[in-house]
View (cartoon, rainbow, N blue to C red):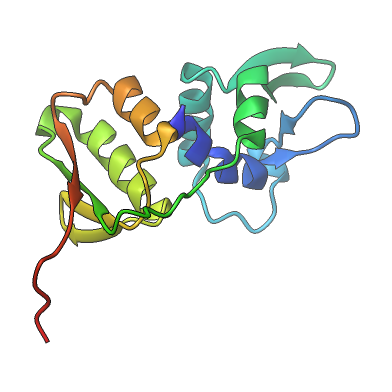
Length: 159
């Protein structure tokens, strides 16, 4: 769910919000000042469809993509950041193989957007507690064996 949640910002950019309870994506030809190629636009729509976030339907004007209930609930779900009160930080280290590159990039983008500081290419630090969304994302991407989450505290600070 976490990966899908982070895609919502792209939803807002790509879609119209009619007065009815449906959200329909604009055709590429009707988008003004687009900074995305036609093929990238359609690739993302297919990705949303694969994740169950949009559904292709027929309208009078032709085929259209409509946002599903799953995407609507993700839109309403807020990311909660709770600071740790124990003086520790959350350290996330992962070693994800190249065969899972897309999952690795999705996890990395999620961590950066969630306020984690990137220490190394696959090492992130945060003063926040581990989010449930992060756990869900790791399970959804099937990365449980590749990701380690630690509570860490620095004993010495270099000046």
